[in-house]
Length: 222
Length: 184
Image 1 (cartoon, one colour):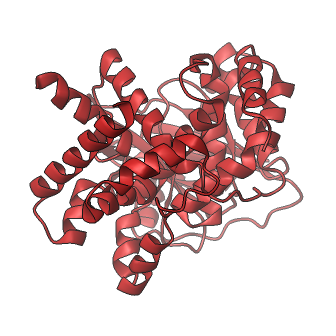
Image 2 (image 1 turned 180 degrees about the horizontal axis):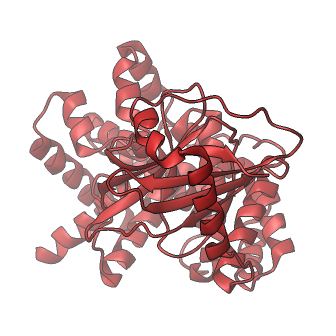
């Protein structure tokens, strides 16, 4: 009877009506057996052609992830932080930031030249410490996200957000990775905002930031 | 669609880090998998994100595929479905659904593959469809809403105007009946 309940828990996890949290190896095997039982439901779904270029984007992400794991990509964090400090001084950026961003007001910046590079320094609302650096190259469309000092509280998750200029709804960039530098392709430009929010473990339950604690705005560096 | 064994051979090669096999796997399966993402998300942009996430995960996880325990395409399909449902939950799909009219909700149920229509899903689909057919219609609908639409217990409770515990009991009864029917 207890075994039966355990198998039905696994069935509900496969169905999606129970969460996957804290699943043991044996429970995982049970859930996977249920996933196979139910998977024929996906067989008659009509195919649809994905857009051209999607495979390239997937491969770019795989390359970026493997580069970060293998340490193939060297990012001089100290140099970047120094540059960030200079920018903060030059623009009074850190101080003005919280006020701007609390209201999600985008401030127009220098007009871009061909393929400029931008950086967003995402700093703590509490003490101004740097939590995340997002650097992106509008030429390649690749953004490099560098976690820089934000620590994840026990039992919670930090989630990254991007608010394109002129929009009111931030988009999730996923959970903040603990160590790896990761790169992804997304459209970003001057006037965009980035933020980190404190979330329940696993990320925002609502799809919107729960408790934003770090904010940063894009500035042009090259 | 390619022969099932071809997909499984490609998965084996991808597990060995073969990038050209990965591209071939994408070519052979992406239309089917994008169809699944689109069916669940009903939004092309979201479905594209889902397919990207799923293929990055597939690249990392091909080593976990055990031939002999289900087909390659169903293994890939389950990964895509899981990512699609994650995206639905993350993007506050609940809010979007509340604004949708009840006529649209009815249409969603209508659009589900009818278990009685056993056309081209293969023998496994026919067996599962036959077992679903034996369920009470309301139970069957709940299972399908959870499977294709990512409904949680709470959402089902709201939809059927029933306590969450009642929904839980019904779902588990339906799943136990399916297990008996399929394995028996």
